[in-house]
Amino acid sequence: MLTTRLKIIFSIISLSL
Image (cartoon, rainbow, N blue to C red):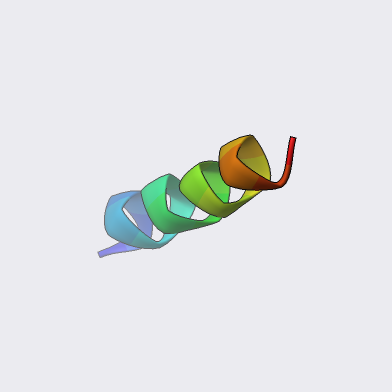
């Protein structure tokens, strides 16, 4: 659901940093 998508986006941002 939305939570999963948010988690994925957050993970990508974290990896980017």
